[in-house]
Image (cartoon, rainbow, N blue to C red; front, top):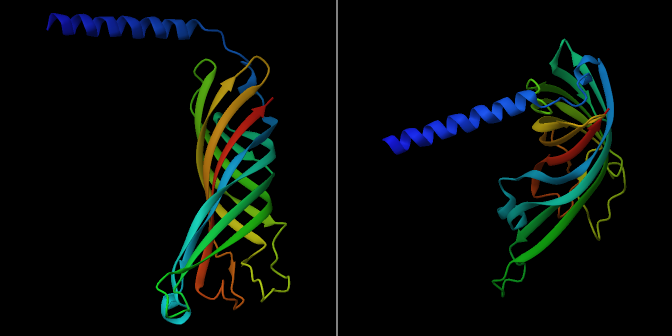
Length: 241
């Protein structure tokens, strides 16, 4: 018991010493929260994916055993605008972004050759170059010296500049068509570090499509599919002044 009490006492002393040291630490960029609006830039990476739904009769009608989605790496850059709403802990953030994404669909078909038991595999890659317009509510903790954390909730509109929605299909070598316009819900969080003249942040968020982005055009690769929803994980580094 005496040993336990000594350990507890040491922990309390260490915590109190750390707290005092933190209290006495000078704040960088201490007037940041006084300003109504801030600008900056963002850069980062992403992993894009689909939530895929195949038709209920896909096996009986098309011989499809399964369609699985695989994420692929991409990147993004954007311009940051943050507006203080009432108090320093509530902000509205708008980051017009140029993003590059790739999604992969893997098909497993029953082999049309009845003399073989081996499955037949096919892979389709769907690439996108997007203009993204996310509008997010940012709820931040009160600043502790030069550090703060926050959560994000909101949504975004995406315009796929690479979409072949209106292009003629190549029935010899067909491809997956997705819609040019998409709307996504977003949820995320991050940490912020205050330097003497700017704020540096790291952020992670998740996007999920609210509408079916798939275009059914009757090709062998599209016929077994019912719906496709975009999914994206984003990691970003943000600088604000």
